[in-house]
Each structure stands twice: as C-alpha cells, then as structure tokens.
Picture (cartoon, rainbow, N blue to C red):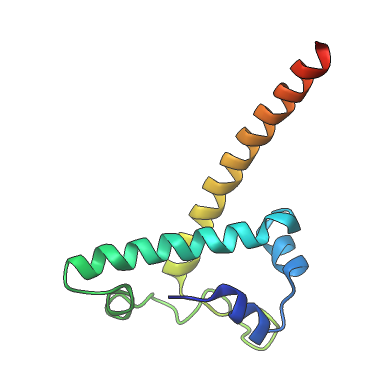
Length: 115
C-alpha cells in the first residue's frame, strides 16, 4: 500500500511542514498518516474481494486534471484530485474525533481536580 512516510522522505517534506499544510498538530502526523494507510488498505482489501484493486480502480477513474497542484516543482506533492479529496475528508474526521477526545480528557481532568 502507500507508504506516506517514505513519500515525505523522498520529497524532503518534514512532519512539521506537513502538519502545517494539513492544519494539525505535529504530534498527530504519524497517527494521521497511519490512519490514512489503514483506510486505504481496508478499501483495497474490499476491492480485492470484488476482484479488483484500489490501483486498478484509480487508473480507471483518472481525474479531470492531472493533479490538484499546478506547480510540480514548488516542493508540493502532486496527487490526484480523488486522493486529495479522500485524504481531506479523512483529516476532517480525524480532527473531529481528536477534538471530542481532548474535550472528554479535559472534563475528566477537571472533574478529578474538583475532588
């Protein structure tokens, strides 16, 4: 499957930079990339059950434009629009879940300190 950490290394993009671009805390970059990889792996496993694969399906449905970014040499990663949209959606879900967990943790700590 996709090794996001290897891609970042090849493109010389730090986790600090990717955190800024994604709008997340640096401490959550590894967790987010692992979640993306797991989701893509689950999608690929499901498609293999159906006799196809994520790679085959992505090649069948090429986006209207070659990439979401127009300047491939500016240090950004060129990715297909469909992949970008999937990552963006997953990021929003993860960030929402993180906020809920942080709120629960804060309330729990506050309740413990009140005792």
